[in-house]
Image 1 (cartoon, rainbow, N blue to C red):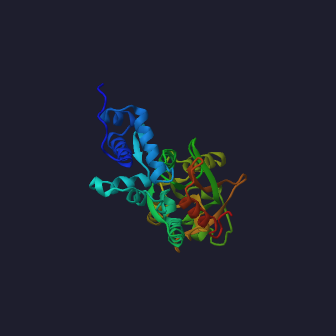
Image 2 (image 1 turned 90 degrees about the horizontal axis):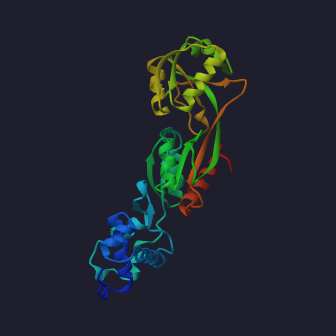
Image 3 (image 1 turned 30 degrees about the horizontal axis):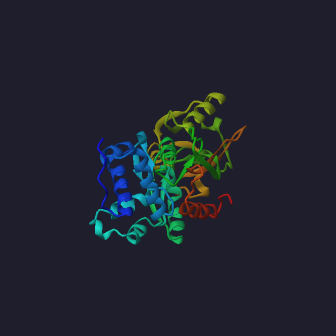
Length: 309
C-alpha cells in the first residue's frame, strides 16, 4: 500500500472523517479499508473525538450482528455534521454531542396501559425526552443487552439476561377477573376470594400457550382436576377485557390495580392458592450503564404509590 499523502484537514475533522466512515461502513475494519489506514488509526480517531466533544461518552456501539450503530449522542453528532466542513469547529461539535436528556425506554405492551401515564408525567417533570418502544420479554432483553435501550420495564419471569441488571419495582398477586355477563358475577357476588376449583366449566380466556402465565394456569387446572371451557387466548391485557365481555368469560391474571384500576365493568377476586404465586414489575438496564436520565426516571417510578422504595 502506498503511503497516504499528508492530510490537509485540521485534527478534529480528521477524527470526524474516521467517525463518519465507521458509521457509513458499519465496522472499524471497513472504515479503515475505505480510508486506507490501519484499523487502530480509525479506533484512535473515534476515541479522540469522543474525548474531545462528548466527555468520553461513546458515540458508537455494537448492534445486532456486531454492526456498529450510533448512540443517542452519536446520532445527534452525525446528523449535525452533514454540513460544509468549514462550519464544523470544535464548539459546534461539542454542542452537537452534548448530553441531551433523552431516555430510550422499552415497555411491555401491557405496561403501556397501566404505567405509561405515570412514566410520562415523571419524564415531563424531570425535563426528560422519552423515546418509546414496545416489545415482549425477549425483544426488550435483547435491546437492553445491545444498548439500544437505556431502560426497559417488564414483567417476570424474565428470559436469560446476561449483561442486564434488573430491579424489582412492584409485586402483584394473581386474581380472577370476569366480564360483566360471566356467571361468576352473580354466583360469587359476595365472595371475598375464589379458588381455581370454582372455575370448573366456566368460559375462560387464557394466555398464549408459550406464555409463562398460560403455563401456570395449565398447571393449576391439572393439579386440581379442573376443566374450563377455553374460548380465546390473548397476549396482553390490551386484548383481554374485550374478550371477557364478548365471550362472557373469566380469566386468571396479575392484579394490575396497584398501577391502574380495572375497567368499571370488570369484576375481580383475589385468587386463593395453597402456594400463592406472584408477578413482579422489573426495571432493566445495561450492566454498569444506567444513564443519568434513566436513573432520574427510575427514581421517579420508585416514588410512585405502591412501588418499592
